[in-house]
Length: 581
Image (cartoon, rainbow, N blue to C red; front, top):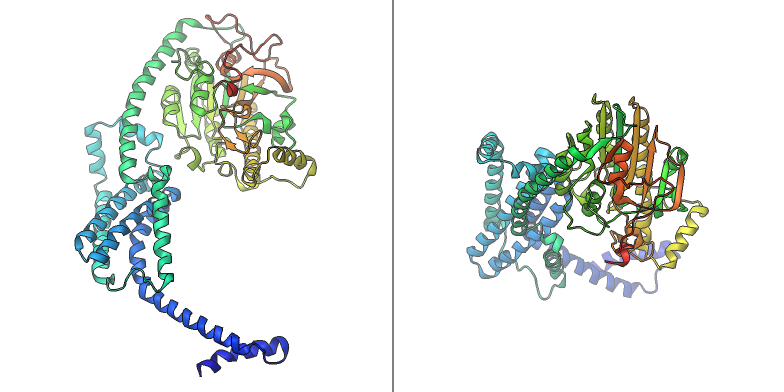
């Protein structure tokens, strides 16, 4: 009967295909029966172990899923995988039949659940990571009385969270003592399929704990580092306030107004991120990555051969806003363009799409108005630079007669694909004139498909930055101030398959330092167009911005602006920086 039942579908199939019974029907029937029996056994195994494995995975699913649902999918996955180690206690509980291992497992999961709930709370309440600048700043500056008031105010939320925490703990205990079947072995020697899930769980767990960035999210390591970061931030605040005081003290006697100083002016400084001029069409790149800037470059001054003094954000931003020289990261800044502008009566704004506590406490905290749009740092951020447009518009509408507006973009910071919206997925194009030179250059360095894909994503992010620049530039041109100026530059560059099969921050290649500098002013006589040859030092941004504002530093009488015919790149024993690390 079983044989005939197995043969029936096979006979029908053969007659449909060949119009006669299959000559190999007998052999196929035997194979069919064996597969059916195996499938039946597999189904029985599934029914037998499904509930046990579901109970095993449920704590990790809840722990990781809570944080992922609250707003941080990446860290939710990390914590979920790390918590899988609790299954080792469950395995011992299964084998030894001692509830002490069950208690240890529940305590393990309770630790991770409390960790996940705490991290989730800041996402649910503030839509932000717990280590975002404004949260770290608040904790560092909170007194015991303020902390007590905050917790008193939050008692209803804490009550709900405690009830959920206790409820989940009781549920876990109930599931493992009443539902979990300890008589069913986790694996069977004669059933290889029963080894698949334990092996997958084990590999995920071991891999998560082996990778340092993932391991850093585990409760003991995370909170140890978090407490340390609060302590460092407090020390940082004291140091930065001392520096800021010195900047102010320097500016008052040493900064004076030039004859062309205007009492009604608006200056915008746009600091982009990780943008190398090698990938700007205005600077000779085949792909049309900056069509907006290219269309108005007869109004702009574009220096393609500018060099940042540092290949990473912290050193680069310090060097362009203070007197920190190139390739001297330990230098203590004694003056800053922000203090110079404030001494001349400017209202200063810091509008940022980056979450960097050091830069925020050093520069943002020193300005008259600082707003931080981004609640995540670095590669984990998905906030788009266009979200700053309303902030720029509001700053321009401020009734202060003199305004210096610093706009800090996330630009082309890796992860490149997170830096632009879908409509800027432009590359690769179907235009051979654009694509062939790019592909030939990538082939010359034997770029991997991974790097080629990152080059496409990087160029998309450059096109998006071009659009962001154009929007802010248009807003500035519509401003009513008598004197209006703009400087756009990147903090540093990026290597994206230019000379090696690599994409990211690069202290050892020229693309890690080579950046564009773009100038515009409605009154200054600046040379127009793109200059692809003249080398300029981006660390002199503070001197050039001071001159654009109409100020001078009495201690720097030999200053020559970038656009002057007699400007020369300053001699520096460490330049080229990428060859003299």
